[in-house]
Image (cartoon, rainbow, N blue to C red; front, side):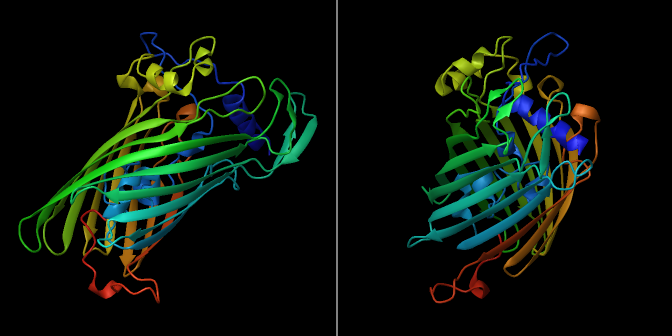
Length: 394
């Protein structure tokens, strides 16, 4: 219980008091960027989680709603649903988790349009709150959640785009009306949008051999600030990401994908007075390219995926973040199994680092259950038996 109270205290310090700590690299350059509702940047997808959190340009599945809304029209099936469960800080406490549910449906004469939606729910478990002297100040169930709805469509045979709207609710001190040192408290609410584009072109060599190059770009969580009290507002994790992927189908049985993603938060580095919180969202985005060392603010993800007979997949990846920008660096791996309309993905984050540099998902297994199909009973259309094989990398 003491560990959990400490965890919630750290969360409140980050979200409410604004985290005015400034990380410095060896040259004294400040790069550390903090935001409220950081759960919006936790990967809710076991497939991408096994590939170093690569997901912007790899072949689409129902989790494209999170990675790149523009990918959805390129899904091989007409309908898809995904459910993911992610334990959080498993080494410390048993009841903190992130749950994610997403789905899509394609429509139009050429099935070139799609609607999609998702819900993510982050629970901090049951908490008994205390003040700095250990006196009880209330109990509650801290939680955060976000609802998405999106629309996307193909612009050509190789290009698609999409937009997603999001509502965010954050009650990180549910059950408490006043936080010592934090002033009056209220749950935070915000609205945001994602805009994504996706390009994928396949080069056929023979009936069983082909190569696919894909590119994706997405601006995510572009929206309002969030406030937990009457005295300040904080940025949400607005982000710009780009990714590329290359898939080689060797023959009818083997294919492999290599992918790279680069991500940068569109939030300015804090100055010593926290002045970034006083600027507008638009100015904050522009200022994010003016403050700190820009190259060191970019996170890199590298991943690979191998499929045998479109039935079993082996995945691995690596995530890198500069020491002056958080110092998260970790290796991931995982497996995928697919049969007919059903797929199960699992990922594991290899324990690395210690203290603040240790990833909260270290030594944790994540699972995603996916269903994709072409026909809903009674709606007509093609059946699963006469659909093409899954796209490379999927």
